[in-house]
Image (cartoon, rainbow over all chains, first blue to last red; front, side):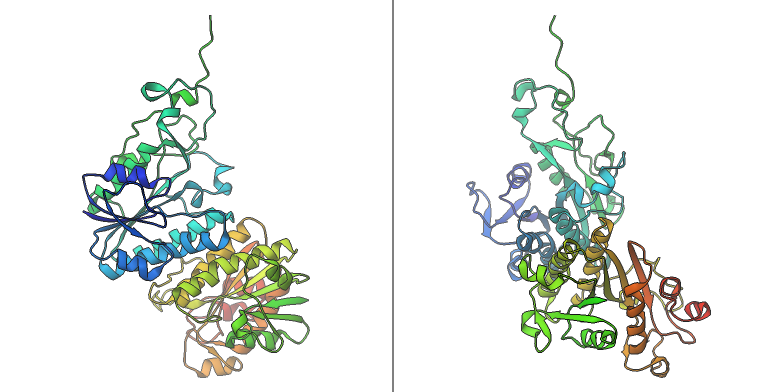
Length: 252
Length: 233
């Protein structure tokens, strides 16, 4: 598959590129040039409508990893209008597979997270007014409307707390105990692998043209539910975070 | 009551500001390129100018449909980012309510024979950036209300807006038409009515075979004057 990646050189981008490397042709875009030059690179701001449409020509799928948080102008330009640009590009070139990403609270904002348990990705979004959450949620709403009106399959992967493998103990790090971790955590490699699963799933297996997935490791809190991505996309976390919620052994 | 009206240089902004002028202390604003006379230019940025435009205001009438021109990027920007800036500044200044002027065109893709009310999901299109942006403005307003920053009434106006009174709207032959007099009367009511934290309100001029039901307008704004008219089909 020929895949356009928006925001491919941010925090998540390199892990996604690693998961797709050798399996797909990648056209990586970002405002910053990556150090790895093994893939085609186009310097591109996701808020540039014409540029995004041009970059999507000849592609089979678009993955959007772009995000900007602290500045109101930049946040809405990238997180909201960037999604309009992506969907316009998809429609222009007949691209049917879109993978969008964002934080879990663009759907499950404080009115959910502070109150309830067993939160799942099929709830209606309640982002609240935090800049990052709302600007991403508005971008998601644009994507939803496009998927409703056109033959475009939108999969949205929602993340939150991402951890380096060498902080998790086990073979790649020292034992770590009792961090009382965020009940929506995942290791970076597993986050990249989830994108690969979304890219490679048969579209006919998706229940609808607009599906959202919570992506995090198996955790004991029951605050959120991650069964949907395992059931539909076949994703399984390779990194397990038990050390972060177990107290250290008591020394004799 | 001191009321801020946005997009005041537009046709709908002008209609509303002229209609509200008697009995209200109006402050009018629009983007700098459209400002003139008593309309103060403001970018609705995250800055002091926006803070000043909302200072001392009791309510904001924010035009969400056909208040601005431009392509999709400009319209989406206006109805998301600038609307966010406006409402957060208004909340910080102690403004208690916003009337967001939207349109029943967001529901026009439902068949005419259906009893569409505020409980039906809107169907924004992708080919009309004015409508898509209007919808995104509704979402922005709803989240502001959800967080308890402001009360928001989303007033979805019928189409077309026919200048004159109810008889003119009926004479237009359009089943979703709303008379300009009815628009003004409903907004005047919405400025003082007991409203929920967030509320969609559908508004068209009553007529035989009217397209949309108006239970919320009847309940909250006593519009139209009799419940029978609000439910008429």
